[in-house]
Image (cartoon, rainbow over all chains, first blue to last red; front, side):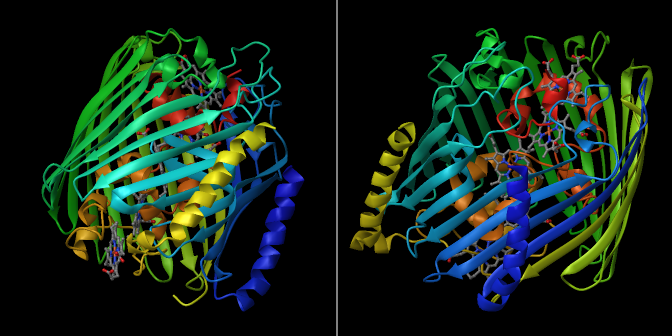
Length: 445
Length: 158
């Protein structure tokens, strides 16, 4: 599989060049990263990571009668130092699901677009966003608008499997997946949609409860007056025979510079997270609910300054929490100099804390400045957290990153990052990254 | 066998769409272009209203609803659910796949270290904080790590 991916990527990159001469509409995005990280992990050995990663994207438009296009994107990585699959892992449990080199095809599909009614047909690996259906499939999809404001879409194919769950022989997903959406629009006033996903039976698991992934739902977009939009959806889990979630957003733009929003989200934990095999969510208490609501306001003080504030309240069986804060963003010299500063506080009950900590509350402060020119570009980013109660004996966590780069040509750029941080998990962390990006857009445009 | 059960309705639908597409009524249903006619500068909050005034053609919504305000970016899931094809006029799938994929090799904030102005979901060392954030709003994590992109998680979450 991995070899197949790497071969595919290499083949794709080789193909790209002759294609560039032949076809009119080829674009290539390539980015290569050489990373360096040295971690001093509390109570464990020092790790030195030297991953080399290549991302490659290829789009060829204007094939066939001009409406056919090819879209490919994927990556491959190899480790020159310690295995980096373990980089998130603090102790000695690195040997599961980790390899010195790996890769993945994020997507690869052919698309045909009709000239009218936004009709498209896709085949290959692609992602779908249709109402409550958000999936990645190896298969086929079709969509079209219909007369009188109706629209229809459908997809089906093989599921894209991910990492095996520890102690199991699979990732807990069924092998085939299908779904679709039917919608109706009335002028610019209203849109309603009905959508669903159906996955074939989940595999039998050794220690966890297998859970079939099936969901149906309805979505809504209402514009009662010009400055107001109400958007959201509700979904139902036919396996648990309960509602899975409700998620609604209202936005109000009284005038262009001011933007107010309110949101409401509620999930029945078992029904919404049902097929999350990693946490055996199908075994959760069917009565547990998570609710969050909040609001935000942003205001364009002047052409160079924007200020925003937000608030969100969470409640779960574990307790309640609230987060509030704000930030200011600045831009100067026609957007080539940008900066931001923000502060948030999470005030959370002990039920959300790590381990047996008495509190989960923490402050977060962030600021950055960046400068972008035709030649040189640079950025500095600083992120700090202060915990109300010590976490693993530390009160603070912080990290800073500085970037310097140069656009060698309009399509080719070279840049480097250096970062340093201290936090409860890794007492000390030094990181470096060298980045080469190449973005070629061919064709008429 | 199962594959066929799933593919048959799809093929039938594709056929149906083929027929519809060739029928005269369909020719009057407006479409949006494959790609946005104007290339927009990156690194700013795109205000559609700056260049577009009224409602989009046909049954489309007001342009201004899609202006990339702070809240639009934060809540883009609501907009993508019904207007994914509009997003695709400006965004390649890879733009979305950097944050949404089955297997992401690098944290977006690390990959795009030169872009501190972007709204990436995790910055800094998230391993510590995720133990709090994951309890606060597991549904939000599930959207990306539930049925995808959990390679790294299963090393600890056994």
